[in-house]
Image (cartoon, rainbow, N blue to C red):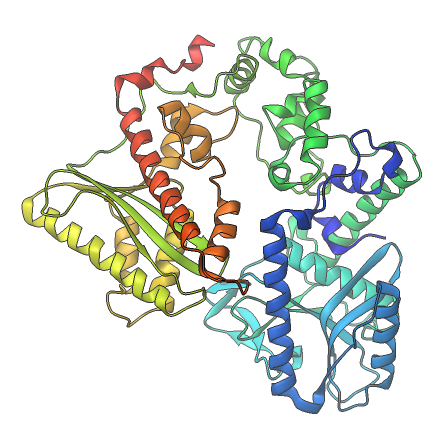
Length: 574
């Protein structure tokens, strides 16, 4: 039996999860809950869903009921059946539903919504509660108020557009198929109504409306609907799982894709890939499939290719649908010269290869390095900056703008306002002295997100900028992202993350456990988020970690514009 997540997992992971445990050479991986980051996110999601359930109970009164706790999925499914059978026409919304396993599926919905309020024969639509945002500013999303959580109350929303998350919509399709198998879904539309909607509902982190998705409307690759995409993926993953379970033919071999970075099975797959020197170790996803199709299966073979001659073997079939092969969506294979250079660098344990004669980074007379720390979707609790360059009447060096009130908190707006006020002062001082200012970050996506989000959430608080002021800064020549500089200047066989690249520039972090996942655990301990006493030592640890990150970008950009960068081998050297 597969849960909905199997449709967005890679096929190899599905295979490994269903191989008899005695056949696994290295045994099963540790439980994902043993990872502090995973356990934290699951605990936060559970708390978010419990808060929504309590809110619905208050808003809906007698129209709301919940399935009582039961031990085991079969008992919970039986309890759900009993609640639905006993629900009179006045009950339109049922929380905590577990559906009976059938047709290779298992799972449950946070909420079931009666298709037509008051009509016991109308069936149920699934509604799920997730702890991430499901809309962005814009228009066109179909939403209904929390107090009216059914599609008949939905209307186009002029302020929101849907942020499509594949795992969410495929989970809704999974639940609809389970409801249909259990005889609980709304009646099938008659043939004369081929465009009849099949609804699924989403409530995200903001928890202020229900977003409704028509699972039957063509919207995906090839004009397929969510249901059609789900059916294809489920059938494929079910075949993979069943063949693994019965020790049949292996239908999914290991191959490195983006998902591998966080997969608990990666050590198993990495060992298998290294044992055969698999080409996906350096060229991942569909690019690796194309190379294998042309006879290049190992890093050694790729490293031996003469790019001037080209690849052996026939041209690959371009007609296959990559979405059926795994969760990665990798574009065309990289330039052959670069692919060969990556392979040679990998074999020679060369961490970076120059793609250009000399990297270029815009420098300023006054320079800032900026790094932000956040806790998932809850907020940004720390903005760290490193001031260097010409004297503008401010103390150079590192400073932090932080809130140690547990997120989410309005005090975040205070710390962000202080950061922006200081940044604006730096810009004004530079302008008054005729000095050019540059501010650097590494991979601006996170910083830009929280610059925009903080301006929106804390509008009107002291020091908080307007949305237009934030957009002006982001679009200005002042704000420079070093990540594309690295991407355009180097091939990186072992990854382009700051902690992968900065050591080549001579930088090392003070804390051997420095990393995003660990920092979230440190933060929870720093503010006593889980009920313990706030830990000042963890606050200090976070400040050291943040200070190291901005010093890493300083070291990196200084190195990029120094003669030492020419010590990195050029692609022609390989």
